[in-house]
Each structure stands twice: as structure tokens, then as C-alpha cells.
Image (cartoon, rainbow, N blue to C red):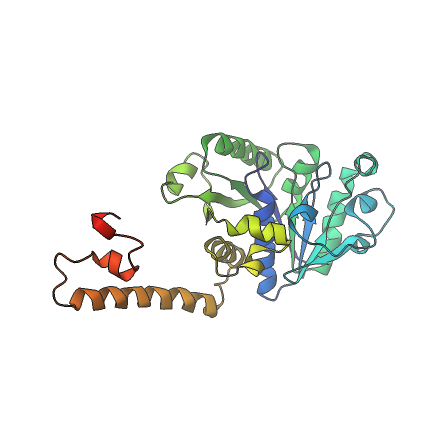
Length: 284
């Protein structure tokens, strides 16, 4: 049985595409699958900027230049991930043959359960190739109109080259965003909604996937749900139980305060449950 290839794509840079690729891959590795994350951005390879990678003997560019075998370019990273990164010199880009990206993907299919390809931002030849060879394409965008317009172009390109688009992941989502309205014009499933989370920048500075660095943070939980959903599974019960226990504790606290006599005219229930952090002086 050969591995499953996911291509993570966006219409422009800066929307969390690489972060999504890293954390979806780490979540799937957490499930016990063998996972390799590949940087297919041949011109602006940047996986090494957000993830501490134990370097391999070669790079993806070496493989595409015919100077190394595919598995010679596989290193490792935190989160039980194998990683293939590209070279960072302009000379590396000049000698790489993008037409060999299909051969690289075929080799990795034979060696891993899951292959996650981080494509280049925007529309280019080395972006188009993985869109056509992947089993599933994940589109990544923020909820802003301009980003969604660029995502629509990537969707159209993926369909033109025969790519199978699994759906959209929205990143940096605040509580005021209507996610369903944001994706209505794209006509693709909403696979995940990742909340704004300061832990993302901290994890990238530490060189670790967020699901490893701060495994119970809001964005980490959302990325974990995304990764397991892509595998057709539910997240581990330990994380589900944490959520259920937190909800139960909050409900019990509210009920306890509501049952206390003489609460009229006293601080609000929300204020009392949160220790005055919310709901004080009639404000919420």
C-alpha cells in the first residue's frame, strides 16, 4: 500500500500555509503514522525558518539536480517528523529540475504512510506540479477578502490540473468572523478554523510544531483536529477528555454560584466564576 500525499497550498504568502503544513503533519505523526514533510517551494524554501531540522546528507534541490537519491535528502524534526528541505542558495534553484518533483513524490509514497507537501506561495510551475500529483489539496487562507480571492485562483488552478481539493483551512480566525460566510463563494468544505494564537509565533521561534510546543493551546487543538480528520479519525481521548472536563467544571461552578443565597445585587455570576476578570461592574 502506498502513502497518501497532501499538498498544502495558498494563493499568497503570509496566511499560515507553512504553519498549517507543519502542524497537520505533526498531528498525523502523533497518530503513529510515518510522515514526511516536504518543502516544495523551490525558490523560497522556508521550512527551516519555522522548524528545527536535523539536516540530511543532501537537499531536495540536490535530488532534483540528479546529484542525490530521494531518501538521502530526508532529515528529522521535532514531533517524530521526517523532513525534506530545499537548498537556500540561488545556485540551488538554477540547477533544480521541477519536472522531477513527481518522481520524488513517488519515492516518498513508497516509504511513508503520509507525505505532506508545503507548496510555494502564489502561482508558479513548482506550485502547479504538486497540485496535480497530490491525492488531496488543502487550501489555506485567512478570512480577509483579498486572501480569499487569491485562494479562489488557486482553487481554479488545482481544478485545471486535475487536483482533488479536499477543502479549506481558515487561519487567524477571531471570534467575530463568520467562517461559513467567508467560504460561501468558494464552494469547498471548511476543513478547519484555526484561532488567532500567540503560541504560534512562540513555537516557530522555538523550532517546534505548535502541537508539540504547546499541545493544549487553542490553535494546537484545532490543528490536531484537522490532522486527525484528514486521517478519518478522532483525536486522542486524553485531549477530548480535557475539553469535556473543562466544560463540566465550568458548568458546575456556574450552578454552584447560582444556588448561593443573596446573590442579587452582588457581582455577576460571570464575574464571580472568573474571579472578577469578566463581568465586573455590569460589564462583560
